[in-house]
Length: 192
Image (cartoon, rainbow, N blue to C red; front, top):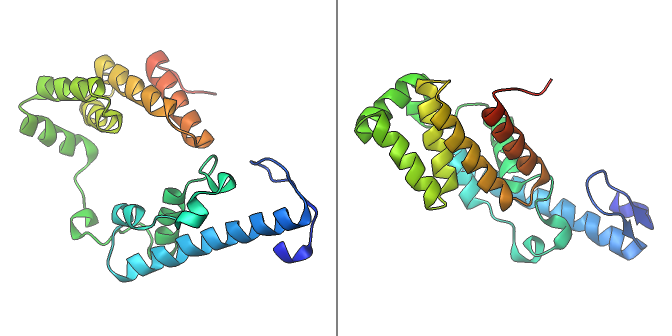
């Protein structure tokens, strides 16, 4: 596309780009960013990194990461990394423990026991929420909801954590998913 010398580029999820030089630069930068994420992910795969490790390993080069139009407003490099991994290697992340993991409820019951009981797990989730450790609060709430999907306190903790995560999220798709899921937890409904 960059070689077509277009004077305007109108994308589905971005602002229009005007001027042949600017269009060529934007398309070239997108190509370079995607190629870098792909190649750096494959490099990490070849070094035995798991998807979670790859997300930390693959960071856009500064000259690309600083571009306004390459900010993760719609897609996200972390998601691209996971897609590249999955495309080449499938669902298995290389960790033998994950060949046959415990079902979520069985794992959650063990985590609650380790924490000193379900009440301690709830307290830890509340504490995490109070400390703005919102991702951890949501993950702890997931354990509580795996034990009891109707736990109203766990639903509220998770909804609050997701709402807080949404406040600082520039990615529109992620922000919408956080807020929609939080609403569903609060209202006990799913969109039709």
